Amino acid sequence: MENYVSDAVAFLHLLKDNLPDKADKAFKRAEEGEAVIYLPTIAAAELYHLFEKKGWIEWWNRLTSKMSKAPTFRYYPFNEKVLNLFRTTKAIEIHDKIIISTAKAVKADALITKDKDIIKLGEVTTFWL
Image (tube, rainbow, N blue to C red; front, side, top):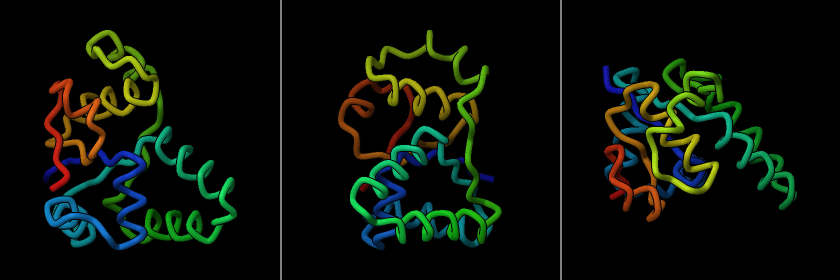
């Protein structure tokens, strides 16, 4: 089974139903039980913060509903395994370090992101198109 990691922006686009084709296909595969998509808890926290700040709490409810309905959508915690992988990334930003290290920890086939800084590092396979 394929494993993917989603950053906050990709998951937001999923909730808004406006993902580009390749990312959308990965999420659909997870909805059909053919792939697993991990949402790092740091990305979930970023989304919660955004939704709370903007008064969009209904979007948080959509996220938690989506996560609970599909067993192939899973949170991945910021844990010791992820922390120990920090030294393997050149990312500067702490959120990027956590997301890249999470992709490495779960041996993700790809990280679903449009973040140019992460893509430019080339440390993990990424896609967005």
